Length: 178
Image (cartoon, rainbow, N blue to C red; front, side, top):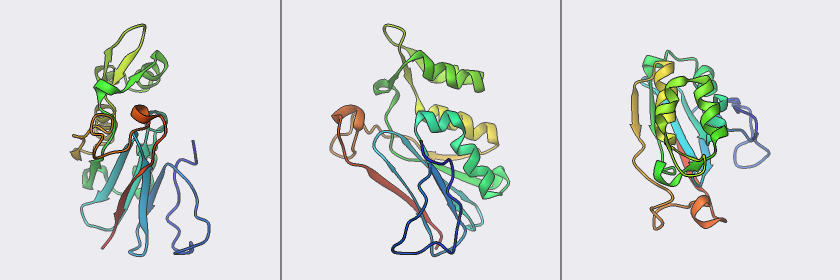
């Protein structure tokens, strides 16, 4: 996993130079674009209702469990009730089989996360990454949540999926201020 959050650095070079790699970034300047690259993981876009700050977070299960959404919200420095979230294309529950360690990681932090898992075979679970993200957002006080209706695994003609193909490209999810 890379650094949890890239700072909004208006002095960073545009169109070249080395920029930090992280699981989330924020922007308060119109010259900056936040982007995350995914293939099954969940991209989460955040913005405030006043249009003064945006964020993009790469919320795979490890980052989501480690608090990537919480770190992005904290860095945005906006009251949660003034934030909106959009959940981009990700793997759906019926295709997202995980081990007990994944379920345990979420339930240990947030017991109600147990509702986002259904049992599979041989001690495996099917995780609903959209539900897990909504639970984390709601716990922060964010209730304006949109998106979350795609499946990168099943929708072969629309999306890349590492779980489906083994080797794959990536999709970019972008957000910026106008």
